[in-house]
Amino acid sequence: MIRVTNLHKKFNTYHALKGINMTVKKGEIYGFIGRNGAGKSTTMNILAGLSRPTEGQCIVNGKDVSKLRHPSELAIGYLPEDPKFYAWMTARETLDYLGNSGDNPMTKEAINDILDWVSLNKDADRRVGGYSRGMRQRLGIATALIKDPELLILDEPSSALDPEGRSDVLRLITELKQMGKTILFSTHILSDVERVCDTVGIIVDGRLTMQRPLAKVKREMIVPVYDIVLEEPPNPWLLEALRKHPKISHLSSKETVLSVTTSEPEHFSLELMTFFASHRMEVSSFSRRKPDLEDIFLKEVNGK
Ligand SMILES: Nc1ncnc2c1ncn2[C@@H]1O[C@H](COP(=O)(O)OP(=O)(O)OP(=O)(O)O)[C@@H](O)[C@H]1O
Ligand SMILES: [Mg+2]
Image (cartoon, rainbow, N blue to C red; front, side, top):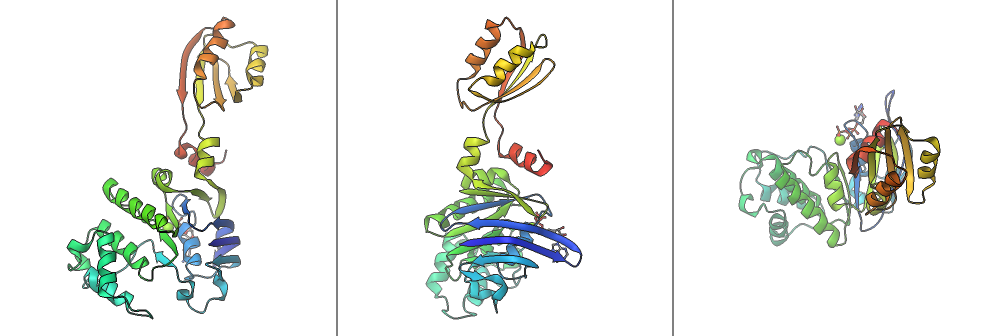
């Protein structure tokens, strides 16, 4: 649904995007993560046809964004980072106004359905100016759905919401996927990505440093690490034996401190302790930790 090749964006002399390559497949939820200023919104604005690439190609919904006469040709739903509404309109009036501005005007029933779906039906006739942030965010998602688009680009739909508001938005995103839609959303909340995404893309300083299916990230990168402190520094040949152990994928050591990464998801601690016991090595501490997406993200961001 989206194919980005060597995308660059310069704002005068400032080089914000430095050759992004990314692919969003039909029917998936793609989590686009990066710290403040990494280039998420710049990328998404270009993909929504609101800003031009300086260099590179972006195909969205089969169209080249550089060749658009108007962003509406992309027929996508877009939620900007900070959606703006007329404060004096109600949510119902907002949807009616936006939904009837082009072809295929929206029926009253369709507006009701969308309001229901984002749980704004109770407040639909209140002025948007009095809405909470979470309500505005849900109204933003509702406006992105007006033309029933196949592809949704949502810039931080869940950030700045409380846990309940975030859960609501994540549930809506999951339901959109169940309806067969494709969703690209940005966030800096990694647990949100872990909850709903199929693919994760990490952007660091204008470059996409990682793009992988979440299941693969979990399988390959979120593996247990054992931190062991020995009473005495181990013999070099013992270290070598550990390094060659078929179940140990990585070993680092500094004097009495060892860090062992294994590809075995479970039940490796016994084997490891037996190894130390059989070589009469006293262990003063032994612990197991499992890195999460946060650790992987920090590693990407700070350079390995
Ligand atoms: N119109 C602009 N003119 C000049 N610089 C810009 C403009 N838009 C973005 N930038 C710069 O490009 C870089 C990327 O900004 P962008 O808004 O894409 O980051 P982001 O990843 O969305 O961050 P955040 O998490 O804070 O929303 C920043 O350094 C920003 O200052
Ligand atoms: Mg942004």
